[in-house]
Each structure stands twice: as C-alpha cells, then as structure tokens.
Length: 166
Image (cartoon, rainbow, N blue to C red; front, side, top):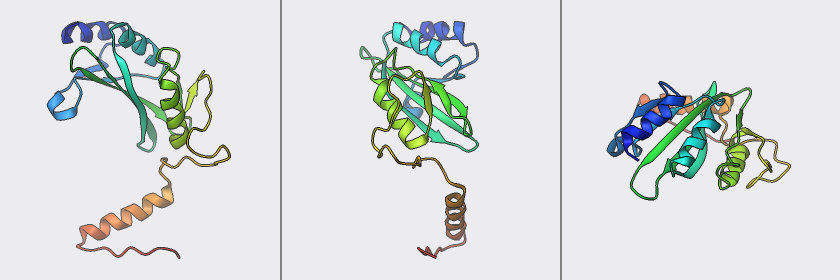
C-alpha cells in the first residue's frame, strides 16, 4: 500500500487527524492524533493494512496525558505514531489488546507507571511494581516540578547548588 492510499484510508474515518512527517527528522512517516473514542477504529484499520504494534507508552504533559502508540510494517520501512490525549484527572482509554494481543503487557506497564486505565483490558494489574504500590512513578508531582524549576533557574543563572534532605 502506498503512503497516499494509507493516508486516504485513515482520513476517511478520521478527517484532519493525519499529518505527514519526515522520517529523517522524526522517525516516523505519519503522525496521527486521535480521540480516545476513535482509537480502536483507527487501530483496526492499521491492523488490516498489515501494521504491527511496536510499543505503547505515555507522557505526562500536565494537565493532560499523551498516550503514544508506535506502529510499523515488516515489508518496508514505514512507521506511524498515534497520539491520544486524555485528561490527567480521569486517565482512561480503550484497550487495543483484543486487536494486538502483545499490547497486553505494554498497557499493563503504562498503567503501572502512569495510572492509565485501559478500559476492557483482560487483566489490568501491576506488571513491574508491587501489587500494593500506591503510586505511579512517571506521573509528575507538583512538589517535584517546583524543585526541577528551581534547578533549571539556577542553571540559567550560571550555577546551581543541589541539596538533598531537609
């Protein structure tokens, strides 16, 4: 399938969601932003077109979380990034593990580190952290952000002293 044909197939279900990317600059050929409601429909199209799932991860952007999916083809070098933005105070998105069974562990890891609930996931539980962990280590904490900003401003002024403890 050609680049234009794939782009057109996606645009029929998600108009204005697809942007061309320069592989040399970004590492992917298409950049797709999708709502959580349209995610499964898009992933079904990518599966039908022969794409495999590379990974699932997230980025805490405060006040929202960007859930990131990377897809690629075996037959030729062709990579797609899919982004879905969800509210940080209600981090839920549908699972794609019924389409790509390998997404099961990627989604569990993302749940573990970011607290994102993948709706209808067959076994959404901790993967790497203890079952009784009451935190998600890759979510940014306001108190930590203040410390990071203090360090950044110190570097901007030509030096920074970092202290630990009280």
